[in-house]
Image (cartoon, rainbow, N blue to C red; front, side, top):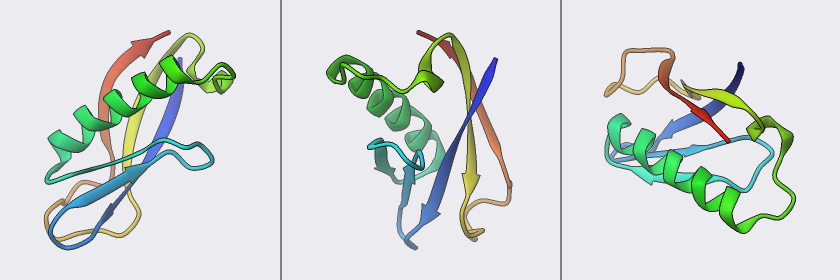
Length: 85
């Protein structure tokens, strides 16, 4: 199973998240929202892109990593459910 790293940044009042090197990004007020919104962004990418990046073939796990530690989050990585395409 592949691990896909999602980078998370805090702007003070909310978070933004992206997968480096791909046009997949989202925002949210907290980490639960980021997780949900990121999966929705990936689903839209998979639906709309005829040349899907090979990292999304088969099972994969999203791992959320803060770019800069924020006061709102004390964890360095947060795992998400396993997905399969």
